[in-house]
Length: 288
Image (cartoon, rainbow, N blue to C red; front, side):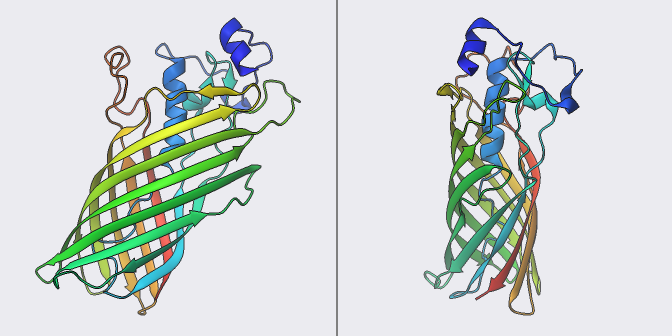
């Protein structure tokens, strides 16, 4: 169904969210840019940001808890597709809850503190969509003086979403499931300052995103020609209270970056045009 509309321009059956009715089509609207932004935005929402300092635990300790990643809703400007004749239903959930475990190993050479972490979201149906999100991280931190911490970490995430994401073109059309798959990986350089119970931290890094979107109505594949490849940053604080309660919060930003192919960037300017994210993330955990 989607493929026939793209080829023949038959938009009579396309549906638009009531909130988007009457919104004028921007002069710089581009179909490929719109699709790539949607693909990248969903992938960026599930990247595994630190939510801890460069040295997350004392050696031999860890934590088990829950991350809450706020998913900013996309406005009509980014949800309208097919030459501004149809809106996509992307705002399924305002938050991504993600169980997460981290553990710090014995120091190397008495100075380097290695650690690792895993996070997993099981395929529990939410708003008619089933998602599986699996993430891993590994890093090492070092103390510089009594309070300063430096570190580096790598992370990766695999996300799959099964559900009626693209939605039908008819008001009472059948519900047909779509498949969305995204991967993200990156590296962060971290700086922290350990106080008595709280460690403020800053992470500056690079994120690389790839996506695959299969639309079940007609087995059409939406190719992402501009996958996100650019900076990502986190500014937050991690606190250990009562020796067992760990709380963390951060502001996360992926403002935009280089894209491929690069031959049409000059004609379609705008930092972050093909994908960006500004959000907040929280964590509550039990210290082991």
